[in-house]
Amino acid sequence: MSTLAFKFEEIAPRELRPEVYELDGISRASVEAHYKLYQGYVNKRNEILGKLADIDLGSANQVYSELRALKVDLTFAIGGIKNHELYFAHLGGGGGAPTGSFGALVQRDFGSVETWRSDLKATGLAGRGWAWTAYDWDDAQNTFPVWNATPLVALDVYEHAYFLDYQTDRASYIDAFFDNLDWDVVNSWVDRYAIPAR
Ligand SMILES: [Fe+2]
Image 1: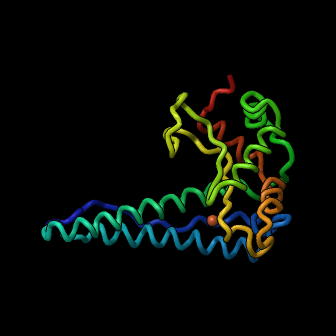
Image 2: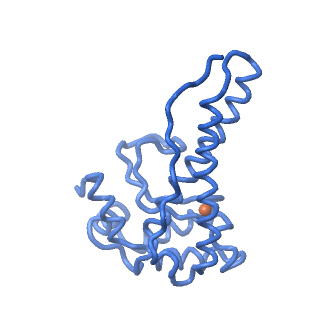
């Protein structure tokens, strides 16, 4: 049997900071339900990698359709993990206007906090799943997704993120999201990735 005998390690879901269970306007029940979905992505990723590691490449065509499906599902699971890790990591703060290095980047690249906030909110209302503010390392063409960009704010607008608290009122959920952002966390990312302020 020839296999994709790569090595992989199972990962475990990251614990949430306690503050994330005590948000303003986003209930504990909603965060708990949302966290379960994130755990599901982690489990799915581990499960798919296990299947890929065991796949028998000897049976040609048949195996490639299975392989394709597994790889597509793997990208979905990994995307779900990364997005939610960002999302939960930067909630639990006091919101308000961005401070520090991220605040300076917003001023420089959007002109004002209001412009940035309205832009992300409108994008969140228009989108189906996620809206990000990212630092683009290239002056890129408008490809989708945007490669080589570092997300700094990740807004989940899938219904599961707000339906329990707001039903169809996505706009109010987005306002609550802004109210809970932790600028120290966002600024630690700006610093960690050495995003140039000029
Ligand atoms: Fe989500």
